[in-house]
Image (tube, rainbow, N blue to C red; front, top):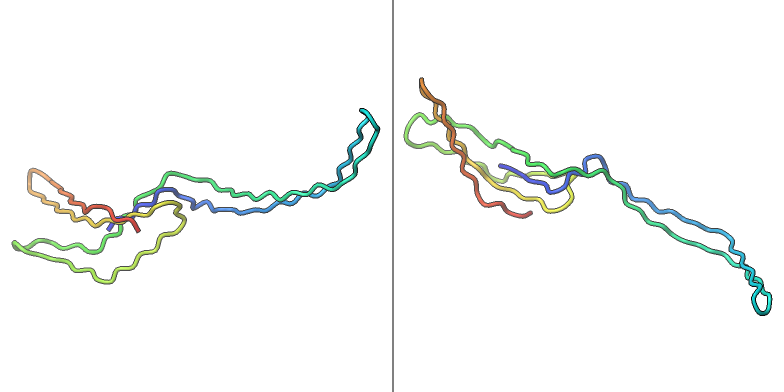
Length: 117
């Protein structure tokens, strides 16, 4: 089983909220002189994180030596948990066949289409 994450935010995600409050004073000397006194207030939300490219995590569900022409592995009710991922998460199954002889080692991988979680 392989799980893909688009954006890695494992360094953490910080949410902040800043407030600003202060007096304002204005003086006009054109035309009729005037003065204005008031208060300025603002709220500044922020989000902070160090992001990295996503990863693909491989979770082996079984391994079986092929001692005859048939073999199988069954995995039912498998649960996975994805942490520190932002953006789409995909999952796909795969199978590997490895053959070794005295003169060569060969591997073949077959993958399913990814499914968006």
